Image: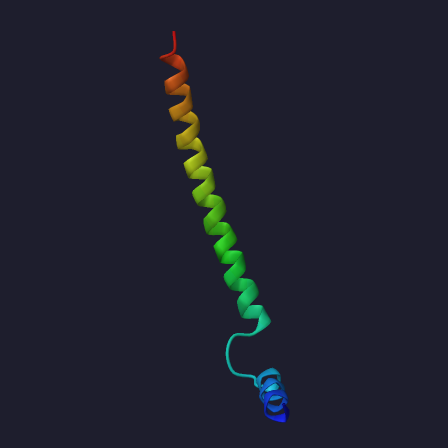
Length: 57
């Protein structure tokens, strides 16, 4: 049990790897890309529905 606690403690103390700031920047970039994709896809889907609606009797 002590070995597990020591490993967890060393994991929390280590400064290597991505920091919270880096994660926040990555998350912001993902959100911007997702919003752009949703916007582009939404426009295309809207025009597709309009085309289908115009062909209905």
